[in-house]
Amino acid sequence: MTPDSFTDGGRYLDPARAAEHALRLVAEGADAVDVGAESTRPGHVPVPWQEEWERLAPALRRIRAEVAVPVSVDTRHAEVARRALDAGAQAVNDVSGLADPAMVEVVARAGAAVVVGHWRPRRGAWRPRTVRRHLERARAVLLAAGVSPDAVALDPGLGFGKTGADNWRLLAHLGTLTGLGSAVMVGASRKRFAAALGGGGEGADEMTAFVTLWAALAGAAMARVHAPGPSARARAVARALAEGRRDPGA
Image (cartoon, rainbow, N blue to C red):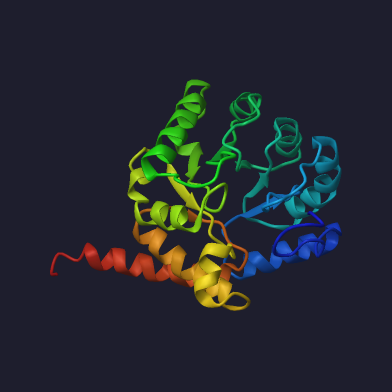
């Protein structure tokens, strides 16, 4: 719900079009729909929470009424999260890693699920163990506030203040996160570091699906994507391979 999203800015500002798109995503295989109203693309201009909520509210209510899958709100602002949860969202996707201190209380009081992303302002040299420490601390804060471990997911924040090499390093060592006791979500969809290997354009969703397959094999429970179909098929391959591993006759 932003005019400046890096992939589809302005296309779904109308609540009816947003709901139609959400239904299309579900038909293509999405297990949940994540709705946001502030772009976090490189060079984005931060939006006051009041403007963010004004953009978000009509579409969120329409989507929540029309889709059967869970709906999460993609926001860094605790007040937006609180209002969205009151309006029927079931989860918060906070790419900032709880930068707003009030977010913890909002999530805990609502009994909502939360995805905690890793994002720090400096670029480069983000080692898997460093990202793990940041996310481990955020997880501990949530658990201390009463949030269930099953309601917490961790996101290494691919592309957020990281170089291409950082992103691939984090993916290669994703197991450092999957052992923390909460689900891991990977968000590589249409991001430059992966899309570049596929030549950009239409190849971006294919490259996203390859990353989804790798992440699923490495233990990630979720992938946040723009085109569910290719990644849903990639996860089906991952499930089939996992079943093959459990075959006692191997």
